[in-house]
Length: 435
Image 1 (tube, helix red, strand yellow):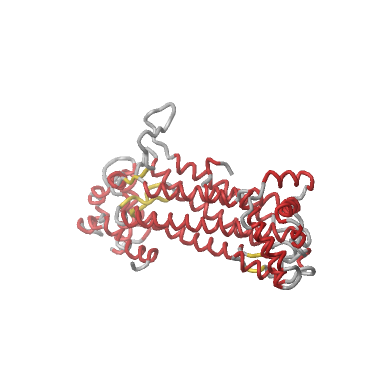
Image 2 (cartoon, helix red, strand yellow):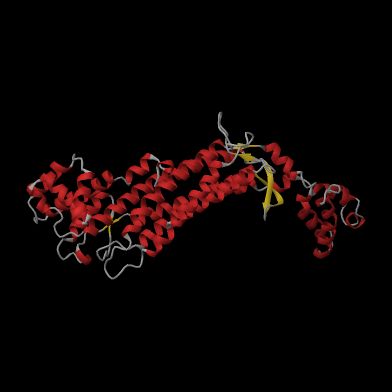
């Protein structure tokens, strides 16, 4: 997590100050629940809230204590006792460190998920707006990077919208799955703390009680969460690569916005490079890189070990902060994307009508020829055009075997661009609904 690729709201979730504030709330709510059950004095629970609610926890002091104790939760509790006073002896009754650490991590991940879902909503809005703007803007569709048949630029964006809509659903589900709380004590048996304490803390923290925690919240939940982040990142890379390809000089159907005073190259003043989508591609690689460690964290020893801990201290902040930044950047790219319909039309016409080859093929088969003979005739006329020797329509009209099956006007009908776009409305209704 570095400032260059961080946004303040997401980064703040992972700050030491935020972490210690969440730790305090977990401990204070647990103490309140114990007071309601008559395990600790109510006055003590009230004092914990009174002293800690507005306290500024001294990160340097906690680090100083941890340098001696070699235990972060104990260091925090020691500092909390310095703030609260004697009543602090009732804090952490029957709890273990994992109760605090795991519940805190899940609070942070749910907060991060809320930001990421809001990020996706903004990206979806930008994609929808531009998709309808270019709903019927014809462009060439490509398979294997080679001109295939006509599509519209709006369809390209509608595809991205549908994909990110699925990603939003996945992220909502991942948030729900990660939003659990464990206050179950050593090895998760509730031997020294009533399960009602866990239920109380869970409700106060906006979480659900973990059904069985074994002292730690099962890491399959976290694996799924980070896997979803990886999928979102992959979808962003797919869209970023599309923009990068469209911006290539030989294509130039769309390009990133180039602001006044922006420089593309330190050596070549003419350059306008797709630096934003290249950056998104790199950031997507990083987010995906955090998925494998999360999967490996699932297999812990018996009821608890901390092999997952160092991993999560790194991938929790890094994956969420990076994805947040990348989603915001992608939204800006789509919102300001420069689109060139004239260049799209020029590229459509570049192969002299070859993009209509399938329709000619089908017309010949419907006229009575075998598919094999139809394919041979179409390809025979297509290959000279591919080499730059004439245009497809003229060659077809001059081919006696073709005209023996199709009249000139029937051949011309095969070159109607609108034929390829007749179901765009249907696809848009499937993606965006009737509205």
